[in-house]
Image (cartoon, rainbow, N blue to C red; front, side, top):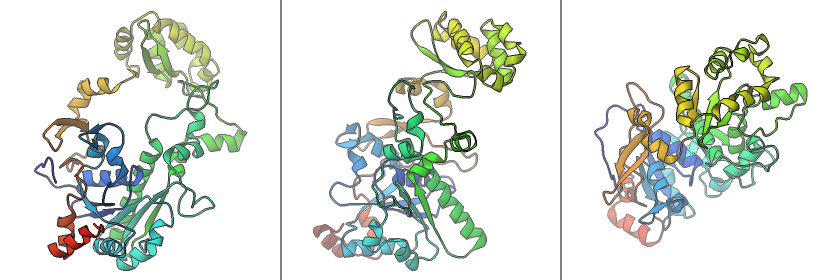
Length: 404
């Protein structure tokens, strides 16, 4: 049940009911974002082991710390979606739901009588967010897809790393979280449309590879216009100069982004290279890009003479965007994170304190909040089924049969 409970102010999604049918990351993270802003999220999990995320990464007393963070404010209900009575429970939940979120392979819900056509007949105003590897249509729709594959197909993986080495991945499942964000945007757009224009609900079709492709900037226009295929560029930002990672005297690294015209001049002044800062050929980005190697060499010649702290202090004083590369420990200790409530202390079921990420974005009047961490498997089954009119005897029978 609720490990920590706060006195809630008005939350922007109060009164919105969400039924979550997904597992792992993309669908559940989208539902988590809605839950953080007041939606009642009923997470449907299979009896027995529940969502596999419960066992991913570092475990405390057998449960993933990731689970506790990502599943905050949700209610856990165990239902066997492959059983007829379990399917009927989902239909009953959907009757007064605003949003259903799922991330099964296309066709899975349809095989259980829980697809869009089935559920929208029960609730014509329903909004359904459908997240999958390749989308609900197209020649690849039936293929299984995970974020690693989507990041490759979407164009991101080819650009990650150094040109003389194989492509690498980002250290998090960025394809999943991008899809989650698009799913939330789609759900809110559809809710707004329903409120303003009336009519019936709709489904939101989010493909993991399209979520990645959607943030690939000028990749396709440059290929279309010039036949240009962007290649891996290591730590630098291609076509934007200077912006890269530079070594310092103490063996640490600094990120410097001197890529606007005025910032470039301030950067050059700070490193004692006014000759470059005042050079008219380098006054705009298109000129600097032609001499990027020379500029990086000039910056490196300065950074390698100084420890990281001196470099940061100097560039901060010159109002040049810069930063060290943060580890988890750096984040945990940083005063800015603390000042903006981006590290929240909560309590695990046994009372052990645990820090979790704060809530984004920050609304001035109706901010989101963490009311409780991810619940125990099936912690809210009795409560939710009672709300559907089931008595304790019926719930006991369903539990004995493995349906809930």
